[in-house]
Length: 300
Image (cartoon, rainbow, N blue to C red):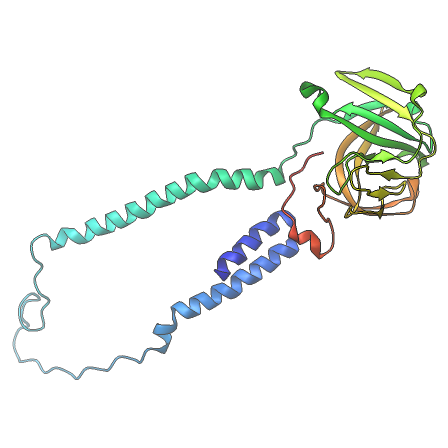
């Protein structure tokens, strides 16, 4: 059981990190040694066999191998072929069991492990020109994650233009998903509805509503509160708001995959973000608590 636990931890570490791989390998090695030691204990502790006294044989030619007192009994009818048949049945049983085990195990292992090694995201999403996002103001931006699915895939991001950093555009793009239970968080500021803009970009209708000075975000479901950088300030959330990655191409802002954040130090373009792979609501991304949660496949 200990060896099996070690192998399971090792396989889990292949996805989570090399430290867990090392822990699993150490557990498996320790229990493998103990297992082998237990199995070989009878052999190691057995007393050496007694040396038989020499047998004085009469002079003359040796008797045939199948004759005499020391000879093995002659095999009876059917005994010669029974041994290879039993070996054949043993091999066939083990082989059939292996095939059945592979048929049952491989699909389950594929569904469980492959998502962690494959990119399940969609293409980058164009949400508008850089001029559509005034500096130091959050813009409530909604878009379709997958136009083929329609409005059910509409998402909301809070986009703030931080100006330039080392000559390149800098943006803070927060997900509206509360990291407590997934409710949509709201801006703690006044949306300017009369300045709303709608734009068809490919198959996606993008809507942008500027806001007055936003002092943070709040969740209407359970009272979670976040500051303007997405850090948790009150309530049950376990980490900061998730963020969208972004690219700037031909003067357009493109949103890429989301990622989880444990904490943000600093503000705007100078912020230092502790980022992690995307995790679900309520899941820790750092500290010992992070080891208690299942693997989250890549996505948005």
